[in-house]
Each structure stands twice: as structure tokens, then as C-alpha cells.
Image 1 (tube, helix red, strand yellow):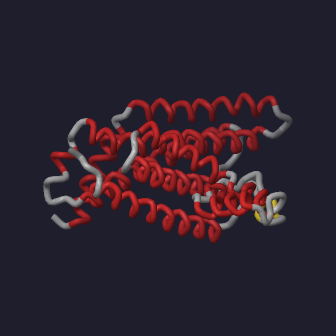
Image 2 (cartoon, helix red, strand yellow):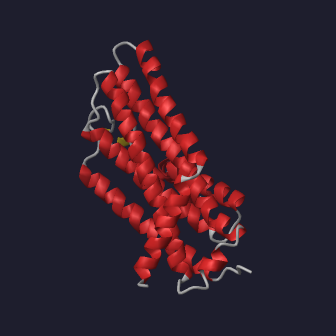
Length: 266
């Protein structure tokens, strides 16, 4: 069987296995419930129902998606090792990097489907309040999905050599640092400029993935405010973010493949 066909077979099996996990449905239902609750919160505001629903809905997709990507990334590979099913797959004409890539693609497709389901739900909730699921919101959801795919690659990197618990801790810690990388750079070049600690913080900020790139609503690019309610980033920015996520994710998967190939599975 051709290499890509073997990878696709693993990906399809991973997708089927992930969709049978009840935890994912519970998390998605939580996001749907949060979007429904946003209607109640919107009613408490003064003619800002649509604005509140968009903000809470997008935040819900991001948070629930993050939990799911962490859950999938640190558990699916370890489950294969714990259940010893990997021993029935690896000895066959399948390289370890193909197995790892297939796992990632299957989980990435699962995340994509879940984000689409939550986005469609958000659009339906908005429609009940006379709002529309506009292009700005679509761009924001695309950025969220890119972030989740990158989180998944980072989680898979750690799970290639560590336990699920430590992998989750490392990935979550890296995500927190990455979401605040801009503040780290500002702090390092401001009060801590020309100091060893400032140099260390600058190095850390340049190495960790910059997850703030993917959640820009409510912030600013330079001196320009960015919001899904007006003046949001264009498709060119989304394209640049996709290139960044792809390059960083590919590097994580490459390192993970090397580490997994050297891992003792006995």
C-alpha cells in the first residue's frame, strides 16, 4: 500500500474512534448551551444582543475547542500504547512517522468537524436574534481552528515522549505563554531591557508558538483596534496565520516523529 494510503487509513480510523468518544459530545453540548445562554445575557444588555452572542459564542468555540484539542492530542496516542494496539499496526508495512501523521490528520479532521458544528449552531442562535453570521465571524472561526490545529501538533509532540498528564500540563503551559507572548516581549524590551531576565524572556517569546496571532478580536494590530464587530482582519492576515500555523505545526510533527521513532514500545 502506498505511504499516503496507509496514512489516510490511520487517519480515518482515528476519526471514527474520536467520534465515538462521549466526552467530545458533552463538551460540544456545553458550547451549544453556552451559546443558548448568551441569548439570556443579551436580553440583559441594551440593544446589544447580537454583539453579546457573537462574543460569547466565539469564546465558547475557542475554549471548548482548546479543551478538545488537548484531550485528543494527549490521549489518543497513549491509548494506542496502553491498549497495545500499536503493536499490531507498527510491525506491518507502516512506518512510525506514518502512524503519527495519520493520528494527527484524523484528529485534525475531527476538530474541523466539531468547529463547523459549533459555528453552524452559533449562526442559528444569531438568526433567532436577527443577527447574521458575517464574513468577519467566519475569519475569526477560521483563526480559532488554525490555533486548535497548532495546539494539537504541540500536544502530539509532548505525548510522543511523555505521559498524558505531563503532556497536558506542558501543552497548556505553552499555550498560556504563547497567548501572552506580546506582553512578554513588551516587558522584556521595556523594564527589563538590557538585563539577563529580559534577554531570557525575549528568547522564550521568540521560541514558543505565538497563539495570540489567532485570537485578535478585542485587541489591536499596532495602533489599529481589531474586533469582529467591525474592522476585523482580512483574509490576507488569515492566510499569513495559516502559513505560520502550518510551518510551526510541521516542525512539531517532525520532531515528534523523530522522538516517537526512538521510543521503546516494549
